[in-house]
Image (cartoon, rainbow, N blue to C red; front, side, top):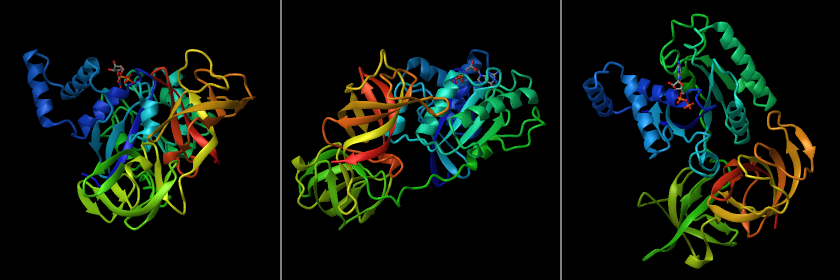
Amino acid sequence: MSEQHQNLAIIGHVDHGKSTLVGRLLYETGSVPEHVIEQHREEAEEKGKGGFEFAYVMDNLAEERERGVTIDIAHQEFSTDEYDFTIVDCPGHRDFVKNMITGASQADNAVLVVAADDGVAPQTQEHVFLARTLGIDELIIGINKMDIVDYEESTYDEVVDEVTQLLKQVQFNTDDASFIPISAFEGDNIAEESDNTPWYDGEILLEALNDLPEPEPPTDAPLRLPIQDVYTISGIGTVPVGRIETGVMNTGDDVVFQPSDVGGEVKTIEMHHEEVPKAEPGDNVGFNVRGIGKDDIRRGDVCGPADDPPKVAETFQAQVVVMQHPSVITAGYTPVFHAHTAQVACTIESIDKKMDPSSGEVAEENPDFIQSGDAAVVTIRPQKPLSIEPSSEIPELGSFAIRDMGQTIAAGKVLSVDEK
Ligand code: GDP
């Protein structure tokens, strides 16, 4: 096992081979429990189709998909020498955008899968744009299904050119992208150098994953701890709980809760049922603040240092991407915004600019409406106090999902906050 952890997104157009690649990664890294393989091997042998262990892994993933119990390839784990990887929800899955920007599943880096026989397809474009908007650091691009195109170098080069152009269009730094010719199905250039691509001398996929930059723990940022719940515990008193997104909390710190606008000194911090003097990003904690009662604070508040308090927005400007909306979005529209643990109805006060989703450039100033597929800069007025931060300052508290009619209809990141 490795020390460092990474959340990895596998993105790309439907049918380009994302699930197959995840299956291959799990298989090659020995992440499928032996008893699972064993059980499937026996079943397969009974049915007279023994022999190919990888097929069992794929059957297993496919079965899960059919049963619809879990989001098939999400939350699978595998390790390289450097990192423990968790695969986070993939675009296309119902709540991907929401999970990616509000949940614990924020991806650090991503693998973009592009089928060599199909090249850049609509979702390739959409996912690359989303990855850039949501702040993915590095992209590994697996040009997949090389077996179908007879491992032709010229086909690979064409697809690499196509993807490079796309990355430039959305202003993704192409220095932070590496390309690898692979076959998820046959296993070429995943765990071992393939004899089928003698013309390729770059890293194979597992090497590239192992060489990804370390995610930087956001300990330098000020403390931001969105409150999930507030309990009353006998003998202790009021105990807000939540996950530290950025910064550090020490006992004795002077903290404040926004937008509830109350504060005090941290008396105790508890983690895994033990008292600790200090907690860091990623830690789930319960804590107790002198003088704070159960009704003074609530879910959706953010706890931060009294001398660098969480911002409360009168209005904020944000860049949004509309994922799916049955009609059009105009000024005055008031859906529910999900940001960290808060859910607040917010009015889109003005649509300031429409952007070209493939280039990121301004396509229209003050458009009358936006619709599915559009990216825009909008000004938003929360209908109740909301604590939110500019994404450039504290990305962990600077993004949101917009939900309406039981669906995530848009995602966005905060450009600037006008405080109350
Ligand atoms: P997803 O929708 O992106 O998750 O794609 P899947 O992993 O479900 O793959 C779609 C189809 O492509 C399946 O029939 C796979 O067996 C096939 N496939 C995936 N990777 C490869 C590959 O490297 N070579 C070949 N020949 N087929 C592949």
